[in-house]
Amino acid sequence: MAKRTPRVAIIMGSKSDWEVMQAAEKALDALDIPSDARVISAHRTPERLTRYLAGAEESGIEVIIAGAGAAAHLAGVTAAHTVLPVLGVPIGSSELKGLDALLATVQMPGGIPVATFAIGKAGAKNAGLFAAAILARSDAAIRERLEKFREAQAAAVPERPY
Ligand code: RP5
Image 1 (tube, rainbow, N blue to C red):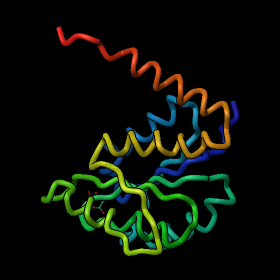
Image 2: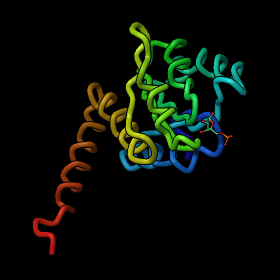
Image 3: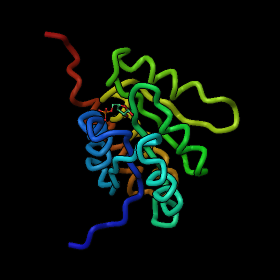
């Protein structure tokens, strides 16, 4: 079967971030939304970043999820290069366990917004779901799948703790 055009990019500063960022891919897969995962570092591979972003929108990407740890500038630099929505996921890969990445991602000066999610896997999962919510505004099939996901999630919560 032909590979479908990815609508969401999942970029991350290092291969070591994939363990966390897979949660974004998993959330998108569950809603049947094709995504494209790439290792792109804002400081180690700056040219790869500009090249990828220059072609992203034209290739069909509508939302970019960017995960990075430590002095995490990937999401901010990405947002500087595109008007696509950028969802930042701080990763707890450093000695400061993600607090550094959280502050670096969330504290964008006014003018270039990055929507920032929780540190780690919960943040990656929610970034995937949020990307789906953005696409659902103009795609009724995704909206329906998102609503079904919420219903199933609610149904799986037991009413009693015992
Ligand atoms: C950041 O530094 C990456 O996003 C990663 O979280 C962290 C460590 O990267 P590696 O040294 O494991 O490649 O840029």
